[in-house]
Structures are given as structure tokens and as C-alpha cells.
Image (cartoon, rainbow, N blue to C red; front, side, top):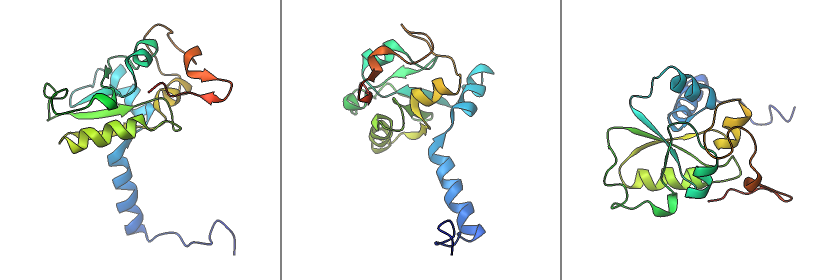
Length: 150
């Protein structure tokens, strides 16, 4: 038996349920940038969940900054509960987007997470705004690897 098939593939019905649910939790950079560039932004808000300094340095155009550590009923009272909040952070090695999405969901908001964070967004060639423009930013990269700045 191969390692690939050591665990049998799920039945098609189970795969539909699993992968359909997964897509309910995440959006990829390509789908999001196509919507933004086409002006299709009704129904959702893009949310940077890291610290304000990281948001100022490089962000997705049109995103708002809601640091996950600051999310409370009071700090989110102004948000529209009819919208979906697409949370992102640094990358797959940072969980600030997951923490932000969890907090927002606990507060009763509908959420999704951007796959790959701002690093995945930049790697996909998507535009950024902020003090650095496009590309890897000095404050996010160290000799030890990526620092999430959250």
C-alpha cells in the first residue's frame, strides 16, 4: 500500500461536505483581488487583525484595522452585523487572523479568513498600500524568519 492511500479517500458525499465547509471559512487571494479590482465589495469588509504599525506598513487596499487583541463588544459596536468580515494577518505562520475571526464570531459576526495572509497576498502579485507599497517589508522579516507583528 502506498503512503498516499494508507488512509482511504473519503466518500464523495463526505468530501463535498468537508470541502464545502472549508470554503465557507476561507477565501484565497485570487478570488478576493478579483472582487476588489472589479469593485465587487458589497457584503464584506477586509480586516487586518495585526497591530496598527503592521497595518500602516503594508495592507490590502480598502482594509480596515481591527487588532484581535482589541476586539470587544465596545470596540465592535459600530460594525455592521450583516457583513462578512474577511480577516487576515501576516501568513500561515501567524494566527492573528484566526484569533480575530474567532473573537468576531464569538461577538456574533460572520467571518472568513484570507488564505496565506498578507504574505500570500503579496506572493500572488496582489496590490498593497501603506508605507512600503508592494513586497516583503523590512520590519516583518528577521534572520529567524517572518515576524507577525501582532
